[in-house]
Image (cartoon, rainbow, N blue to C red):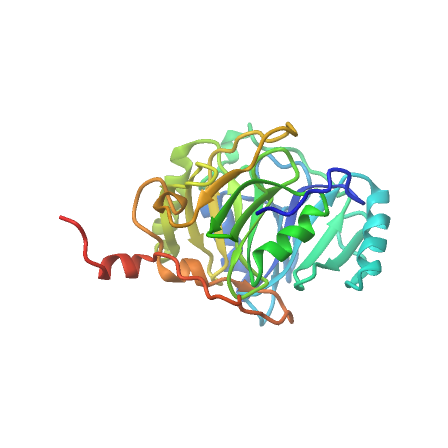
Length: 333
């Protein structure tokens, strides 16, 4: 069911690092991420805001760029371990006919822009300038006290195809979803917890969500409370709830441009090589959530498109159990 993993990949991606989003109103988006999630501003100017979580020492994990294309995503970023990994990555992508070019990016060392086989725009760097961690500066806490960026989830036209590509780069699966003999969800990691990159079927490549960790379960409710207090209550899209895969408590919120961000509170360790990925049967309701109602249809199908990247649909359109379907179906008494 799962493609083989290269445990000695050609270059060493170490973790999810950062992402770049286009936003229509920079001040409004800044307000959302600082007062609802509790991210802190590292730097800003008239067109860009650089944000990080309280436990993050590196300069940024989220970059907001003012644009008339608000609501679109620019790139997702991964760190590589050594600077020479960037040279290996450049050769790897070029040898496979995939885009790869060197760019200059503020607050980062040498940076490489590449695209995976379905066109997902990636940004690789080995170093970044740093700022003091603020995780024990409790007097500066706001909102949900988001600690660090953890993972991305993509909608993709063929989960197995993309899972095979990232398996060749050393990504391992902590858990996966299958339906019959079809792989319909891959939860992949590099950093030794259960997730850096998730992929599920949909029109893609597109960014379904990105996720920040919080320290306590009540911080998830705090995010929802602050969203309601500050006028973003309609953007609390799903949860709080508990996932089946991963088992984390979660809530999903939409920012002022419709980008979806998750806050969640736990992970387990996956460093040891003998740990086997957990299989989930997609016909089981527990793959959706341990408890609570199914998600709205838009949660499954809406995502942030990447700028100038064409979308491709899956050969078989997904048909999840949505809240709308659940409420319209006969319920046992």
